[in-house]
Length: 204
Length: 348
Image: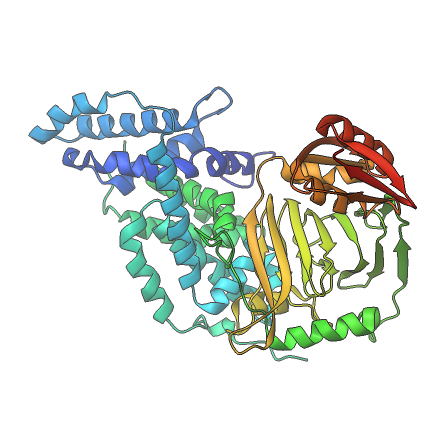
């Protein structure tokens, strides 16, 4: 079967990484101003990604940022339609929602810078082995298997480290503030991943 | 739309998504895992969204960009980071013993020496598809080992276009530090002072690290960068420059210092014109331009009077100091005369 083995193609993931991820912080900031609508920002962002990930083609999207905002907006509207009681504030806010989404602004640049800082802090706060594994994977480009060999750990353990790194980034990315706590909590965890199979291989 | 009960929190979905992304990244899924993933994704559009977002963020270039550990100083534009003191001695030893360290004991690997003459620019294609362009009056020794590609820059300057192979790092060892490529194009130049080096990155990233004979295992390097307090290195991104020099720490002991700064757009491309035998200046002082020419030719150019700070711009043949002098004389409305073997620029 020629169907893709991954539920989301590499191309699409790369497109999201290049065109949507950089605007996520701005999108969240915009959505946060609409909290009176009773929707959860995280939920809307996830649904937005779902729509963008499953869209048949993204070739026709000229301005991914504007498009992402429009999709998020449509998600809110849909949620409003589905909820039985629409909060009164929401009705007033719908007008505010209609404001056209502008081109990337200076404010966006500030948000992006701030976000880079947040991510730096998050990475810095990772436990040492997790950070090492994550950097070997993402910066040095080694495969998980190669990292396992290098660090003398099982592949399973490396996968856990990578997963932990991703979790922290997901919590951090675009959300800024509240995850700094999370980052410092992570740091207090023991460095080694607890796992039955995760024992250190005996060096030759 | 199906009823979502119980509704999981976004954070919970993120965690499941992260596990899947890490597993996919580890290798192909078994058919059972594939089914499991598909079922989970189908259970709620938010799952698919969380998964798409996790994959995108994991591969996001922004993440890699956030990783440079040595941050640029926001105001002074310069950061001094002490490399390990012991690396200073390693560097000193390296200076004395030259490439002695590069003699691998474990395996017999061939070492080749490449030299360029004054004014010559030389292309050196390497067996793995990497390419070295040697600038004037420079010398590199290339040693391809099984686990690493070692290049000792012994004199001058070179530009490296590195074929990506993360299992076999490409390492340029200079007088005071090594520049390890992570799939990249970059230049390394030895300065006039002892231990002075300049590293500029055109694409990809380069780790600037203490030189270590045993080096090269990325893990060691990573430990260098992140492990002990006394040893720091720095990651350089595209369009950044690192200056390495031997300075004094607070206790007046020698230490290797690295400063990193962003290159203005176009500067690096312009400076790389030497690969075509050209020198490109834009608003540099006449003294700087002459110093640059002296790297390429024995023909001395001297200046008399207060001309050193005149600004010059233009594109010149690196090997033709006389043509450069004539062009400068014309544009600054000054004169040239010959004194013994030197060209002298002066204002009459």
